[in-house]
Length: 155
Length: 266
Ligand SMILES: Cc1cc2nc3c(=O)[nH]c(=O)nc-3n(C[C@H](O)[C@H](O)[C@H](O)COP(=O)(O)OP(=O)(O)OC[C@H]3O[C@@H](n4cnc5c(N)ncnc54)[C@H](O)[C@@H]3O)c2cc1C
Ligand code: FES
Ligand code: FES
Image 1 (cartoon, protein in one colour):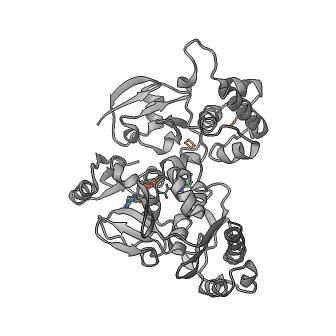
Image 2 (cartoon, each protein chain N blue to C red):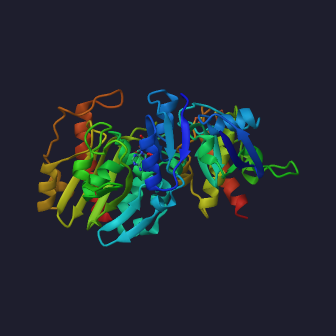
């Protein structure tokens, strides 16, 4: 079946079996491997991307559900000049990652939540990141990173 | 996931026709339950008929009968709706406590109600508020819509179009959530309505149920102390790795009291 959508500002069209998950389309068809698969059961958030401006779990969505939509992956948040997005920079500054497996999903969720809240306290950040798990459990630094990243996004 | 045909519905009537024409078709709403079940090969529909293009089903509006929420309204949109927060804040809180942010962005009220997971949150709200389920064929009171584990009064091919919630005087929903899935181990929705107090419990048994003894006590005196000494029997309640039936029975009492206090503070 034919599907057309926009991924990181580029129009893509492909012929795919209807059962293709959005995450498999992103990783295997577009070779954008920054989006990870942790659990494949909608629990961990490693596969988080933005669909029409909102964070969703791409392992639990068909690419056909995103047809005609705008998808942004971790590759799409980085400016063209090779610098980092303010949220990525904050994760680096605040040591918000250890092995890095959950990081792309964390950053995508964090950018979404920063966009929805003018100011963020620790409690809100923790509640909103409910759907992102870090097996290295560096949550303190992740919360600090999100707070700093949101502040610099709002500057 | 097994193979299937994917079709997009342009209207409720179109979805109904496509369902009728398919061998073993299913409606696709947010897919947060259905895609997960298909990935585990628990279900293998011949066709998926996607309701996402039927924008008329996403409306949230104030009507003479109460707050009317379209079947395709997402949990995130219910949580963020100023209309919902003003008329029935307990419903906005409930929607905001379903799963996590990403699940709420895709999951819908219609999918949740049609699925009737014994640990889902919305069934408690529908029953406690005395809601009406609208389908493409008829209207049903919530009390007769939910039929036990994953079962509803929906006939084959029948489509939920909206839910109408009468506006209560006071209401609150408190859940003791499973820390991994956030589904309700026990959730209690208490509502003081025009026709009396209603207490609905989810997560504890094979399906949502009311507690008449609590309703009578709260009808006489809407205070958490009125629930002192009212025990819920553990016979028929669920036991699993998360909680025994005795613990769930105990939690029903604790959550009910907290819900009453929250409704009064409200
Ligand atoms: C990680 C995770 C955590 C979750 N946590 C919770 C939680 O804490 N509390 C909770 O209540 N739920 C929870 N859920 C479930 C979530 O709320 C689902 O969104 C919901 O149960 C189903 O809605 P959906 O729109 O995704 O429906 P779908 O998955 O698309 O459909 C579910 C079923 O309903 C049928 N259906 C859909 N729409 C209609 C309609 N309009 N008419 C008739 N039939 C229809 C479909 O054919 C299918 O059989 C969780 C899900 C996940 C993945
Ligand atoms: S891989 Fe999608 S939520 Fe874990
Ligand atoms: S940094 Fe290792 S899983 Fe989060």
